[in-house]
Length: 227
Image 1 (cartoon, rainbow, N blue to C red):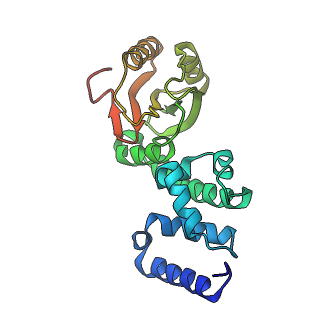
Image 2: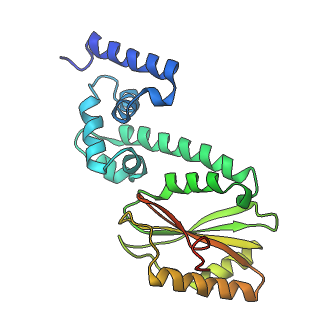
Image 3: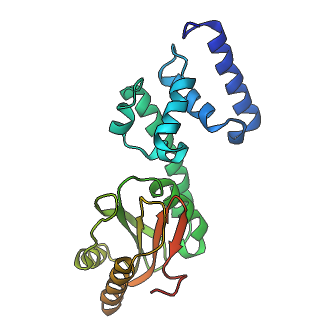
């Protein structure tokens, strides 16, 4: 069947109608990806490509968080189609982030976890972020501090504390991901958290938590009594 045959446009119209009438849960993952790709590649049947992408990246979470270069390497993809997927991910993150910034973090914990999971849980390399809070526990800065390999990203206590001083942070939350999927803290994770907490305490900067994310869930070192 030609890619721009009437049946293809009819199929997309049916997807669009289901989306409008049934909301985001009305379409399966491959159908959402298929429709996004169709906006960028209107004259192709994008269903096989959507399925191939979900298989390649292990699901919709891994697909949307993949970097543009990795997406473009998949046969059938190009800059325009990769940009369509990255734009969808960016829009989702902005929606989740807006929920985080509107209220004090400690009173809005689930919104924070939802945002962090969407942004970090599926990354293929380890990344370390620091969330800086003011005296009212409102988010004032969300910064990527470092990134490393598939199993390690260095954290330097002095750099974390110096940046908190520069920003006038009253408190910080450490965040990093485990590309293995298992969010269980390592001995090194626990030790560096305690070092940062001790250094911050001397300067009146609280470490509220260290959150570790993976595809299998998340771990709060504070909740486990490790801070």
